[in-house]
Length: 337
Image (cartoon, rainbow, N blue to C red):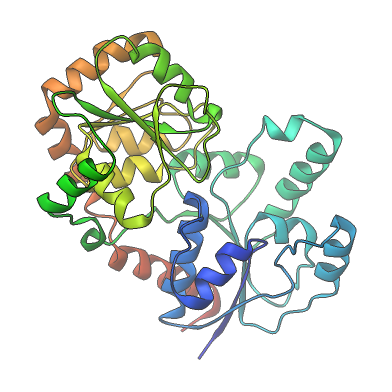
């Protein structure tokens, strides 16, 4: 059986791949990478690189030296950005780079970041293939000079998003969700995700707003914050009448929006980066300015069924069979069956 080595700097991703259970602390990019590695492991002998994991006591120079010495024995290597930048490419082994997004604003923020992103972009061009998650990022990478770029979209198992009415009611009761108000998920409790703009636009309109995340970075807002396990998070998406994703970051895709549509909840979003393709494909509303949000919310709540049906028709194609097939085919193209 062909051997694939997956290089990640994230201890969360590495442990999730090894156990086959996604950590509750995983972010959207982490979740995609874990699911991709597990899909590959069904058809190939997959190994997570120990050398590539960034440890708590690692100084950057120490990490770089370890990665430069590392010479994996494999038929193919899949690398996330950090290992791409700091690792040694073995020309005799085909290599895939995994890119969700590239933060060009961060890339201008310091000399260290200028160096890192410049090196990442140059090294991506030398890989056999770069896999990304939307047409926005495919075009970006091709404009960089990457000659072989492939989209493999985010995918989910619809069975993981089935929730009973009893579970939804339990969620509302446990978290003290008031009756008689539209329940709106206002976004991640993080300034870069647009939570302040959503609050300011909707604070006087009588909705009950929720925000969530691994930690509350918007604690000064009078918005109900929830730190949820996976089951409760899915129940929340079902319980909400609307999900808003007004991220200011250039998104790779947007897993929250995708998951909301799986749960039968419509979405309004900023459409930045790859999110635009998701929302356009799913027939959801895109707005660029928060001043337009109150009217957009009224429109979507009034025609909720229409928006839900359009969303489900689009996303139902991205199931785990699609995901496994795409990764299997991609790897076989590079290394042969």
